[in-house]
Length: 423
Image (cartoon, rainbow, N blue to C red; front, side, top):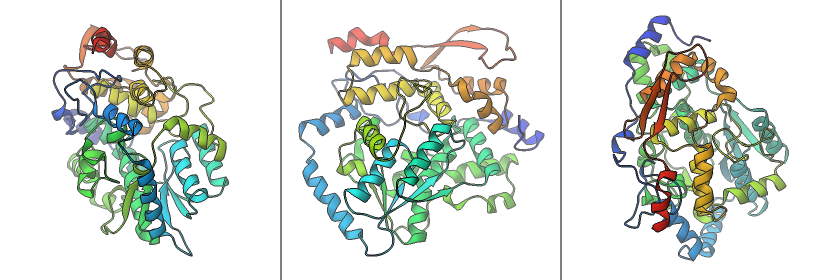
């Protein structure tokens, strides 16, 4: 275990941790499941209508039935790109990881639309072998790419505070993933940034921007950052003694949005129907993308999404703990909406894989955060909500990588299957 601050700070962090994720206060007390897919109303900001159908399924319905004029949106995209096209230099900034979605966007912009993209990457916490191979394959198929690695010690400290206080060590990555591209746009004088999909529309959330090309900047903190930007973690860290003023001077500026606001942020999926499986086939054929050679990812049945970071599995696992929605639920719900699988198949997959613990990289994850397995499980239990979980059994903590309590979901999607069929 590698310490990341002094023992007295460690004691204060463990003793004083209290939830800061503002999404939890808004979660409904009664759990309901969408009657079309498998997502529940515990997903932050999701909306269920009178028929029990979630906002993501309603949006998918609009994508299929012609209520979105994709031809008109395609013309809007070409007009947007033409407005930013240049004779020299870069035309557009594309945040990339080497994964299927960002690789597809960058490749299509270059080869289908004749744009000259500058690709930018906010590095993962810890590359997987397949993630690094996919990233390098993408670069070598013809793209200028800049990679940002923030101060490693500060990044670890922020991740640890985020796990303790936000229930998700992944949050510092989210800060940089969103904001580094905007900084690159300012520094290189390229005022167009093309991101991927509107997650609120595609996976369930606030539908207010379903027909907009991007969220307004004022909504970023609420939608992307759990209502707690990097300043919140810095203030907390200073109060605990985890950060000194000198530390904060060295903190990467890329964790927060740049002061200048002329940059345009657009979602590719506003102009093109979003289909993750199609992106996989496209990237496989055009950018050298390969699926997970180890097979399916832990916690789900898929093998081609979120492959680049050894810590990704813990992001999805903590979502399962906090909201009862794991990695398999997210994958299966979207594939139901894309008509790749039926709801019955999705329910069976969720019952089999959702909440599977990502043990493959657990030791490395704990070492990165400077904690042991026992403390990780104490953090997990702190984030369990009584509306979602009930305790089945308790036994003495053993010096292993397993939890000391046995919990079960109070209400799972397979409990409601007959009710959903009737609907």
